Length: 126
Image 1 (cartoon, one colour):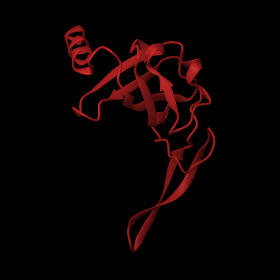
Image 2: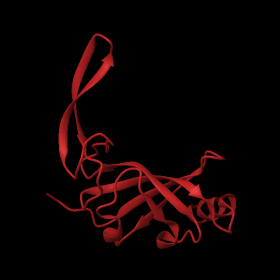
Image 3: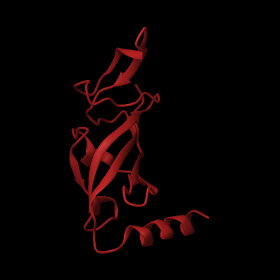
């Protein structure tokens, strides 16, 4: 199985609804963290920020699910409506070297306002 060498961390601001995407080339510090855990934002350049992991996706594009324990792919029954269900492949709730995207939300803000950080990322992207 190919391993992810770069992990994209999506940081969302619940107040403004805006998000930025930060790439990290050394994601080993994330391995073993689960959905719902908090991480230190200073490891990705957001000093003073605290981020909560809300999900992500693996190298094949399968979404992470909080209910599935471990760093594994599983097929689960997914209810489409009250009469029909389908089998979906999902990834477990633990970050491993197969995860390429981690979704986070800010739970504690740093000294620098997120709006300022957002504008810096937007100007650097162009």
